[in-house]
Image (cartoon, rainbow, N blue to C red; front, side, top):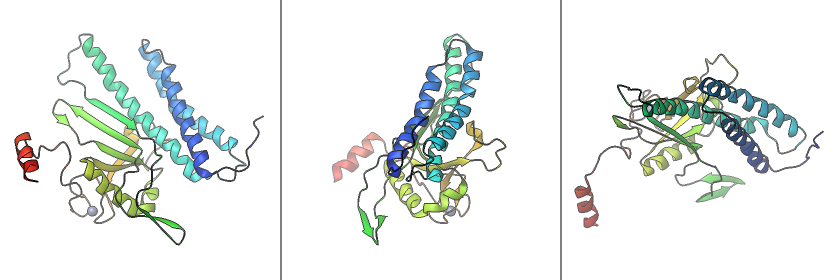
Length: 259
Ligand SMILES: [Zn+2]
């Protein structure tokens, strides 16, 4: 039987828990025989259950550990599930691309979709301590994933995605979200949040259509369906992104030459 640890700092536990979930994803995807299509899809479908099983094991393992805040730790399960849903979509596009190499003709080429996990050990720039509480003073990104999509018509703006366990969890730190909107804009990216569809019938989301992805609006603090203009209040959220052709190279050289 595993010996329970007694005292651990939350972040130490968080590091272990996140690594365990992501390792489970890595192991799950590397044990697949991709040449056997039906077997491969079936094994892929089994990964969310493996993640849920890992969560049950982790709850048991840290049951008697003082720093284990299971509400916060469960967030890492959702991060892994979101990553799984993205990987699942990515494999469908890759399958189509492989068919194309094999001679199958599509009207439109399969898109390129990719989700890059960002490891969240983030130095705290310009934080001010006030009454024993850290206060953020400058825009900074604290997101979980960078998601990109490109098809025949062109790219969508790169989206920095923060995964939340529920819609309620999003409102928790509205100020931090607002800083992230500014920080994402400075990169030319957009900032969005993802949370499981409240109408979800199963316990955990499995595919991307079981996730809601929305853009927080700093004007009304609501969540918008559209990243340009808030679908709730009409305010402009992201007036431009890195994929908008704002300058030609000639214009840019002229602008830079002026400084
Ligand atoms: Zn709004």
